[in-house]
Amino acid sequence: MTQRDLFAVVAIHRAAFPNFFLSFLGPRFLRVFYGFIAVEGIAIIALADGQLAGFVAGVLEPRQFYRRLMRRRFAQLALAITPIVLLHPSTLARVARRARQRTGADNHAPTGAELMSLAVDPRQEHRGTGRALVAAFAARVAASGERRLWLTTDAADNDRVIHFYESQGFLRSREFVTAEGRAMVELTRDAEPQS
View 1 (tube, rainbow, N blue to C red):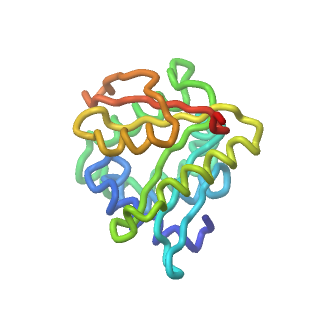
View 2: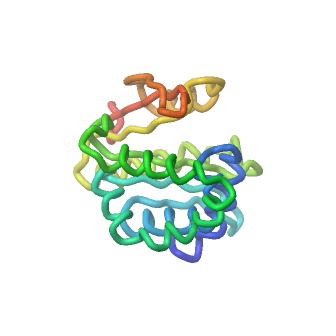
View 3: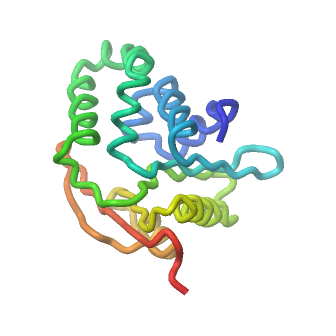
């Protein structure tokens, strides 16, 4: 993923996750967020017929990544969410809580690389794009020397997505409920598939 890909990446993100919090924060926020992952993390795109068909994004050390993001892109992120906060002031408390959770010592995230986002253009689904992106992400994680990768996704009404990840070698490691009351499932796997 390069900076030139960010508008298409954000469009696919918003189509794939229309009711998610990051989408609610807006396209400008998403461009800053994914732009930083492209520089500091693992960000891979898939093309079909010369068009962006999907992407995967994640990081090797999530807590350090979020600390660097806040330190290096705080002003850009703050400007990006200002219009949302002016319309919905409670958003600021939710953003602050998320930032504390992601950077704090009480972060209960497992060790290993975090797969943060995987999205495929709805017109490109069922063509193996998602599987190829997961494999490419896992290969990059393994090449870095990291042995494990993990992700979180919704636990409720999300069987298709959970089944997809399980078919890619992920196993459920825990379930939890966020401060907002959202039921989540955490899945982990080895970076290199077992033979």
